[in-house]
Amino acid sequence: MLVCNVSLRPPRSAIAADIAEITVAVDALATGNVVFATLVDDPASVGDIVDAYLGEIMLEAASANAAVDGAISYSYGVGIDEAMTALDVLDGSIGMLATTTLDGTPSAGIVMSNGNLTAVHGTSNNNVGVDSTAYLSAGKFYFECKAEVNIQDNQSFGVKLLGKAYFEIQAGAYGAHLFIGSGTNVYSDGVNRSISFGAATVGDIYSMAVDLTARLAWFRKNGGNWNNSGTANPATGAGGVVLATAAGQYAPYVRFTSSLSSDHRYTVNFGQTSYAYAAPSGFTNWG
Image (cartoon, rainbow, N blue to C red; front, side, top):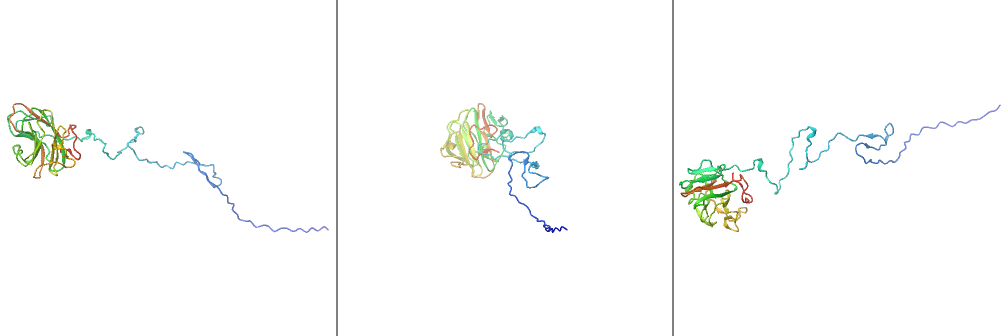
């Protein structure tokens, strides 16, 4: 009998082991759909494509050049604000023009025209005039007066205290004004300030800058030196004459003081049109 001796190996035990592998994820430089590297095995694979659009709207700050596309039928209630600079210009069409005029009910003997900006005196009435519609008590203001026709001594323009008659202006401490004529002189607070601009002629434009808060005034003729001085400057407050001792409400006015043989006419400009000469820094339209 043939006998075989067989020896069997015992069964091996299972070894639990994970195999780790170093990987590098490489970004795909693309727009639209982006390929994402992954370490996850099937059913996903490194070739899977994921739509990268997450539904977020990218916002961008608006600029002065931005435009809204009206073709997509959306209505936008937006405004673009920009800081104002010294070079910006105000558009007069948006209501920035002056509204102050001379009063529509002047003294007897004066006829108003040109939207109550021109006063015409053609009678023998003396010491008659017309005020602005706006009386003010504080602030810095600029306006102009043009001699249109026929110059005669002792006509005047300036600012006067509320409630004072025209015959009180010459000697009273009730404002500041120019006597326009053969020797146009500055009077203020009832005092002749010994400031002369020489003989007036038709077409002359007289400017007035008045600081009601500090109660100081400046005049000039045809864009010349303020108060006929090379150092006077409304913008810095230098060289102003005393407007009046008393505080109160003041308004621009035009006054005629002599018997006339023919029409005399003055036109004021409170900013309804461009000034003939630039207003000093810090001064604005009357009213």
